[in-house]
Image (tube, helix red, strand yellow):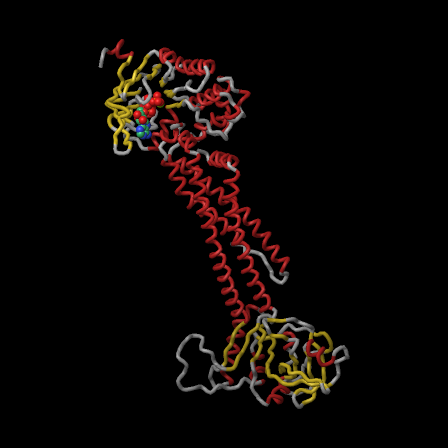
Length: 231
Length: 401
Ligand SMILES: Nc1ncnc2c1ncn2[C@@H]1O[C@H](COP(=O)(O)OP(=O)(O)OP(=O)(O)O)[C@@H](O)[C@H]1O
Ligand SMILES: [Mg+2]
């Protein structure tokens, strides 16, 4: 499903070059549950952004569902993000002036799905995530846990194959965090490929496959130890 | 994205920032209102002048002695002797089937006196048909008698100011006045007609054209007013007039013939062009409003970075972001334009109320044109902020650093 070959990502900060990712090789199969851990600044978010087509590698190849993504233009990448990828962020990133239901419907609007069809899907998701009575509330009228559930609903409204979560529980109390984890793991049980970046070892250990990053490199891959041998 | 959704999304951006909305709208409102009011004023001026000119008569053809070179050619080297226009020339014009009435005119200034009371007045020598040709109305008595124009009857018709100055409230009909050294009997008084293109009929007196020729000791006419049978006959009447005069003047075309229609049309053209120019200049203010929209939109783009990044993350293409921001700028400009049209119409009404003589009212093309210009200026000046939004790097935009 996801294949990265010798991926580098360099940033220029003034005169200095920062290597956020260095020679990353990674293969992720459909339906996997994977966590990425490591110290701050080790490149976890950068890796997730590249997988999510929000960023492009400086060098190397990224194949998504068998297709080389480096040759795709901005509009084709946007289409893949819309249809195949879902994002959940630490800071929710809901649009403050839109209601919960409107925030959830946003990707469908961008995809040009007609209103009646949207309403049906939104109602379904609100129900699934226990948000039915919050449908017309704006983000500032919602608790952190509710906001993140709205964000997850928005990420999954287009039924993507891959869900990318960057510190999804980082801004939540324990109870809300647990609820969010339960929801995304449920999605994984139903077949979605789940990739979670986290600082929380407890959450990280829940994943069937765990990556450790240091200084832009993957220094540990639990799948490599058990399945493929060292690489 | 479905257009309805694009608009709905854009409307949500309006309700989130009222101050910004008000600022951008008011700039456009002022600009558009200015255009509408100025266009109304220009149109009012046009209608006023055309109205005044139409009041002179209907389907008029004016004949002046002497040839005016309007083609810009070199005047003939061997000077043609300009023949006088005579009463006989005027009467001959009635031979044309396209001509219904003619009024030969002779004008001069002379003292008009009643007893010791004396006034200098414009003395117009003409015939009975003048009343209809020139659309004048009688207040008292009759106009000049419909007799042979070559007869010098001693009758006079007074303009209403002359009547008051000479007779006050006393009866004037049947009384005698002296013009120059001749005596005339007052046959009638004109109704007050007000000013007409600066020529006051009120200060004039009218006598038979033959009497005027004797008074001023000249056989030549100042001009001939010819009324064509209908609007369609004007061209025919003009042609006939030229042919008849040429025939009577040994083949020389030594008169200038102007149709009221042609004069009206050139006034109309000039004043329309003036309105267009003034509106065009006022439209520059719409570009100023556009610049303001651009700046406020640029601020909006940097304020809404996170939102733009998020839109990209959930699958908005650069093209869609561009479309959303262009719609926002265009819709703002257009709404401002609509309100501006309302304010402009209101302003025009106010001017109308202040100066009732001005027939205010923007020409029909102004409103769609000004709205189109407003929309266009919004979109054009929206391009730069919209492109900035479309190019925004989503990772940067979403980052909280
Ligand atoms: N846009 C950028 N410009 C310059 N440097 C950047 C940029 N984005 C990331 N970096 C650098 O790349 C490195 C990796 O950053 P990244 O955000 O991926 O780290 P991270 O592992 O997600 O850290 P954290 O756990 O704090 O979120 C860091 O050194 C960071 O400073
Ligand atoms: Mg990070």
